[in-house]
Length: 198
Figure 1 (cartoon, rainbow, N blue to C red):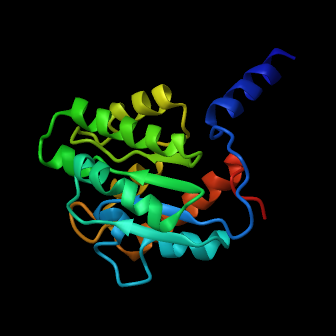
Figure 2 (figure 1 turned 135 degrees about the vertical axis):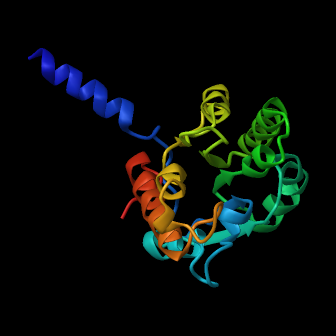
């Protein structure tokens, strides 16, 4: 029946891009700014710590509060050499928006970081954050970067948290419940993409 084909197409459109399954014990690097670091919650309540508990893989928190995409680009190589991850969750750009830096510069920095990781055969998931628009929406540069670099995009997960006052500790950062929701959403995303297999 025709409606079955429409349903299949919708399911494909909503499913994350498929990834290679991570070996047992493979290290994941969460690379980003304050919402990666866990600002607004107690130690151990950040999303990398909660994600690690959900998926059984070490998730290294390399979040630096206040960091822009340009600053992240500068420290990426040293962090990769130290951590040697098999997968990176890349979450930068929010401070570029807050500082009104050119979106094209953030886009170029993200593309350069992703290409550097791909050259080392490291899988990448790009994490979108809302821009400064009203109502809040993921900044369109993330979809452009994901398309150009062919990496999976987690586009709505932070938006679902940061658009709810009950899940935030202040106007910018999640609280513990917000980080927990994001960690669960990313665990689901990684399983649906095939990166994590229970």
